[in-house]
Length: 336
Image 1 (tube, helix red, strand yellow):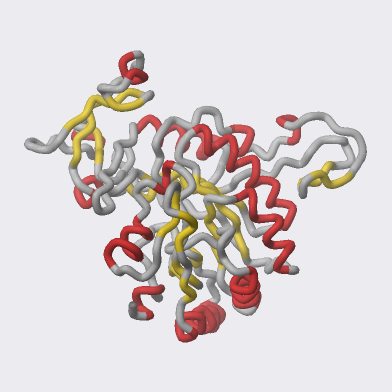
Image 2: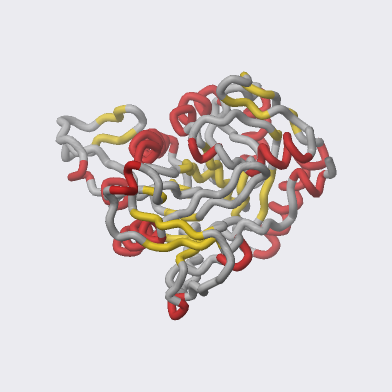
């Protein structure tokens, strides 16, 4: 595999400026992993590593080249000269907080991050429960890291966001949530968006619990997840994309904007609503359609009791685009 394939000076991912992969390989751990593009690329198409998952073990990991590891040094130098701080998505083909990764690889990565202070490193993980203990094992925490977690449904929202805010005790630049592929409505997200101490239990005294500061007033200082990214699913080999109800996107968008937070809609995926055209949803004939409710596709027991149905059409990623109700959302968090 070429170094250009391992990472790139620029990326097509709309919420990052560059991608960097210190290693490749991972293990499937949630429904969002069902259509993993990294697994399809690295295992199915290139045969470079074996992807782990239920019934097949942990898989394999392979560290990328020394030349690849030198690239961020050049990015950092250019960023200093340009007076800007580009966003680097770290590990699009792996997970920094993967249990199977050798500890010294993570130490080497954090050393590189600390040596590139003009870059904003986005560490997105499906294993936020590992962040604190693995950073402690590294022994230091670079100040130019932002922690994020993937959330595809309510179960992951409840579990992953609770672990993510605990990592705020490490003092990252900000916290973010990538709701892609979004496979269900996430409901009320305000406890994670407000940073309001009154959403937490009253406690006495000033101290730290599980990495979260307890203020002098006795309230836990819950940090806000300051950046929300949404996206639909795309086809990956034999795995065909599942449709996302536009109301699931709208729910996150409306709550984030109401709380004054950055919102970024990456893509609609393979599916979009069948009209109205005035909202940027064309009507395409001759493509597959499904009746989707807020609970799921037609044909499922849940969908039979759902309301607010909408006809979705399989338009393909290119035609589906990035518009949500005719608007392109490109929000980014402010970084000094």
